[in-house]
View 1 (cartoon, helix red, strand yellow):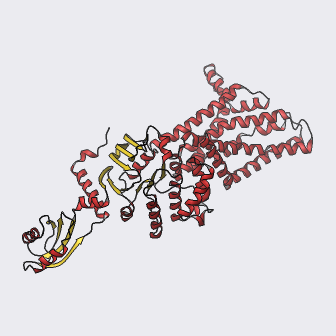
View 2 (tube, chains in turn green, yellow):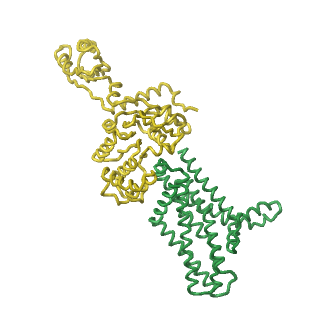
View 3 (cartoon, one colour):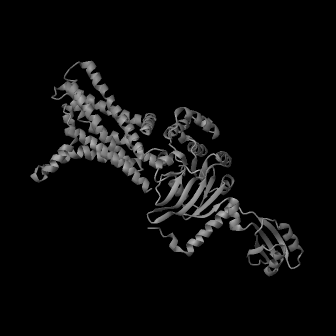
Length: 253
Length: 334
């Protein structure tokens, strides 16, 4: 635990002094800002059914697929490429502490970036004072969803990083897995083939794993323990695989 | 319980990768406060052995104990008593020197107050004060190497393992590093590997030469020379019969004998190598005897001083001979 905090502090520091973090942050905020501005234009021209928060979070997957691998791809693959993993693991630290420390730092940054988007809603609130535009329920639901799903998405990024000593490979792998998880489940569950009775179990399990369903529920204020369990078990499993994968790589190095 | 006599005990250590045996049944002990030099050609298994000692790589079989802790059984305890500098000295590119040392110290469980003092001391000792706030990635090889050494001795561990600490340094920096290592003598047990043989000879109490994953020679540098080359060796360039020469030699000393001779050149001169089994110097009596004798014409005579380089070459050559003559020994153990 003591080492975990040392590594966490170190990793956060390294992320904060790294220019690529700021590039990622600027791109992320510029992108989210333009989405938000676009939404507001829509709301100004015609009345809409849902609150802006719901519409805003529906596009969460675009930054997730690109920002998460950007933040995590370096973490373990860089250590392996430089060989500093060897010096790191010859101090009294376990591989679990290394992986968790890096995971914690990446998650911290991921959630900080998302927290910054709260500023958009604050500005909206300052200038409109319209209760409909700032419906607090979907807003909190949306951020809780981002926080909970972030555990899993960042863990996937870390896992991808533990598989290769090449950052680019780790990054592309991360994008692919996240795409399959978020968009893939959405596309496959929409296939008409699955409506046959034979595929009913597959359809129901896909429905259960569909990230957009989770988002809708969270936005409506429904916090389902099954969904929480999905993310928490997914996170745990992915992190365990990262730790085991790293140890296996060491055994065969 | 820590064993007072030996800091490092290695018994029948074997490490095999898919199909090849990198370390083949190595056993050795290192006493506390001793500096052991590891020599061997590239791919001999030096780095693999060192990595196993640090607990970074698991061994295939065998037993390794460091300060009484088993590497396989108590890796955490072992990691607390070693300072390790890997081959090529990997360092993070984007940290400042002081930051890096501080981070490493915290990982090695040093308390903040002691760490600050210790870092100041090390910066002084390793001549790094000028670059303390510079970014590591922008420093030259010599500085990086010294940062690696400073990091290895940071927590003042009883055992220090350094893989080629002087590689890529200029002669002046090698001198500094040598001084640094000598200063550890008696206080810390040190294992260093190197290709620079005079380096090892000067700093180490004992050397171990390994080749093809096995120990081919071990001992103090002087003892090794004696073992491989006899106590004294003379090179003589002389025209004359070897039988006559042998007769003269036995007159001078009973242990003096010809170990090798070459074919006569155009002028009838041959080069002889003579060996004697005493420490006494026969150069003068050889010179007077051979010069006076009319059967011989003497052109050159010198007492050879074998360097560690000769020992290294002879010892590694010996293993090649053994391996060539018995191919069965290189097949990996199942």
